[in-house]
Length: 195
Ligand code: ATP
Image (tube, rainbow, N blue to C red; front, side, top):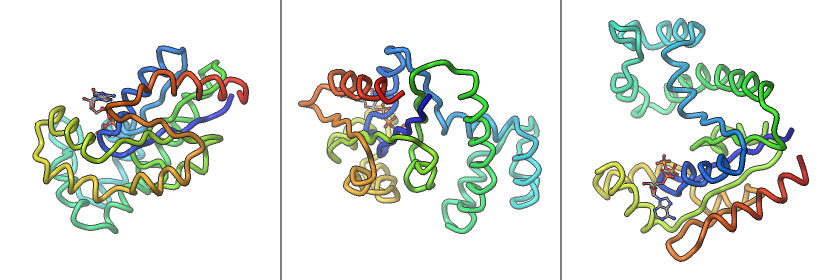
């Protein structure tokens, strides 16, 4: 079974693309969701986060205080790297365990920072969902009720589409005038042959 990483900038449509793969019977591991859940449930993560960021990082109900943590790490790249170095290995192990329970020609690993984190090196193939900037801004401002400025700020913190396209084996274009389902069916066919 081969492992396929799928990524794309904020609002590019990676979750939408993954829903289509899922309909085709492909198991999808959503790394960002797994990371969020593991920060609440993994004692390995909890112990290390408390050691590095203090016990204030958890709320009285033992769930992570995301606002508090974001306030610390988003102003300090070295602390963000530290946070990732604590969370990523546990997510990676969860992904490996998850894979061993699946029987499919291939599985998808969806992550916003697949290339930035270096995790793409553990994948057999990679897919980037690429969408024009104006389109992404329009979709995210509508979906999350955020200002254009804030969305732009988040986009600027991510690797550009051009860089992601260079690194990816497959690209799905998700602009208004392009249909993603036929593109996904083509990629799925190729991946099933590899798998
Ligand atoms: P994020 O990284 O912010 O989670 P994402 O890459 O997973 O975003 P989606 O959530 O799949 O992106 O898509 C962003 C928004 O755009 C959603 O509201 C989705 O329904 C919408 N959308 C995605 N693709 C299209 C499309 N082709 N046409 C119209 N709307 C779309």
